[in-house]
Length: 344
Image (cartoon, rainbow, N blue to C red; front, side):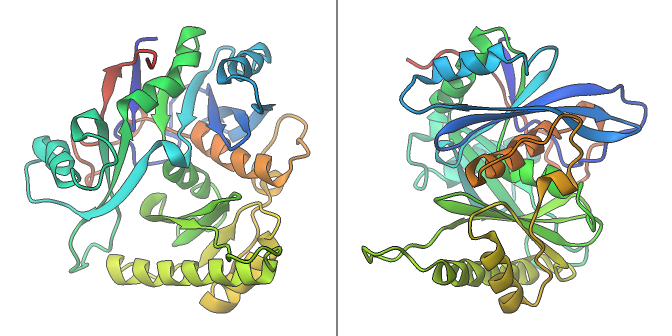
């Protein structure tokens, strides 16, 4: 496998009619483990999780963890979509520059030169046009995604070396968009807040299109004693409320109807506090209840459950060859095909 797609042109999640069934594996690396979900995409019956695996990384090398995952057989006959971890890429919300579509990526690379933590020529750049109301007077906003070429090559290398068919490298924002689009009420504006130990990812969609994405740091005080969970939940809820206000101001879309709260030890508290501060319905996302599992549903701890959300979402990706091109997409800005070499 010599070529891997970086955020190929993609905006619609809907499974197209007439497309043959296929099997895809979403792979996500959390803080301490590799998490993989094998999903069958069925044009008639919808999607279902056929297999789910986690491999602890711990002190072992990543290559050993990948080897154990490969031995499980989860990748057999499947295409793999690998979702980067939050430390492996950066996002920048910007106003779309007034340049021809063919020049958009280079214009963005120049625009971000002072913000990137590495040389601009070492960056892989992609831009997602965020959906707004058709009659909105606000400028067209982009979510620009940047990753260092060496980083992308490093995460892909163990799979490519093992002969695994890596279809795409993606990001959690798009994985959440994919999963959110399958949940009840996806036709109206709704949001998903996924949570791990360090941060939360808040994404908003309207009719399966991404409207807004923001990473929220899980706030901690400087006190040495254990933080009060209620205080953490209140501060997270405050950041979500501010994000909701930004969405309404920037997009001109109808108000958000639902905010799903992903798995976390404090999920119930965060859901209650967010509902109180925003006035929006905030159900907790229980994966076995909302996602069809053809295999036995694993007993997941909060970290694995949070990673499972992203792995399943990544596996739900439908590519540009299978769907009509959305009129808001750049012809070139979401396409990157490059030869990956092992990191030095």
